[in-house]
Image 1 (tube, rainbow, N blue to C red):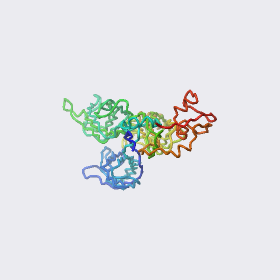
Image 2: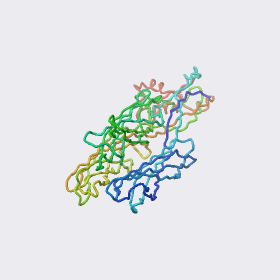
Image 3: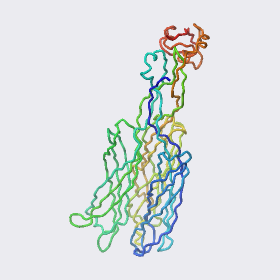
Image 4: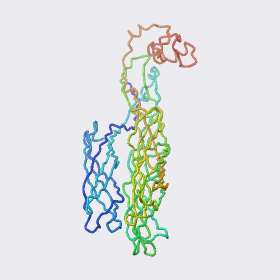
Length: 523
């Protein structure tokens, strides 16, 4: 057995991806301590996933929908009601094994909070679960003859192939915490009670460094509260909190290529007194989960063929699949749309606008990755109607974007992160608002490449009968598809000898070239 030096490349491979939709539907009674409902103003929901149960060919996803509803009471005030809807869904994933890595992403497609009567709400939601199964494995390939071959290696001709391989260097999850204190402006009254809070992650970027990764971004914080005093006037504040930080990550290097998914898994906003004892400060606490993949692009030279002058080599070959990075780019998609606000109402002011990107279809095209989706924009505004002073409207703004991805195919694997980078909504007259937004998209495309590799080589005595049947000297006309290696192997000689005997300047040959071939006998 000829001893070969082999190299392992740590890879991950998508095994399967399955999407499923679940519908959640339940009624909730208003607690006795809360006022009757007159109108729902805002609703929001977050999915909290529990660890998935992984079985052969199947994943059981468990979690709950945490919802909050801001409503106007029959007395004209505002109150917030919250609750949860648990769920459990079994998803069939063909080919899944228990040792595979499974990730579950979710998207809240629709959430409706409708008033059944003044003491009861109907909560309906449609949730899409995206289950991805990955296999972590080592792709093995022979790269060199072992030193133990000694002088016999001189009689062995080797052919090498060069590949650009995207090996997965690190695959793990981590968290980053952001804590900040905010203070009310002097023109606003102190907080009596908080009615509504929102925290959103925007403008994020992740960059690997040596032994760590650096995270930058912003938290957009929005709070509606009831001010202190006899009037109990409804107030709001909106702030952007920039953050940056570094997380230790053993093995990370600056030249690695990141594909990192980010999402908020915890967020809280609590009021606290200032130095004068007034409730004029807010403690913001957020935890960001990082789903980290770091790729390392490296050249790999493998043995693709062997033969010997003094013996027969019987090769056992196999097919290995490697990834190469096809493209990595960032893009921005700008959208503009007009939205109708309250009909028949006089709009005094837009308090807040926010948006979520929802991708409906992502598909490869001719050298592009095509994306269609909507930005779900929610606008909160004030009216001159004293009985309904705070109102909201939700507008779906469609968009289409094509990211350059030369060479992309149906077999390509892509990592896509999307989010709203900028969003504004300003009054445009006639009860309409003009919406402008910038969608930021980060794309990494990998292309699986299959290649033949040598697994092992057995040595056998030289086949003298076959050798005797070959001519000692032959003339040969190069055919379409011929390589110098193939010709040398067929006529029991070497590329070096063909080049020397024919006075070739290099190893390049063309169809129609005439060559003199001299059979070589191993020593």
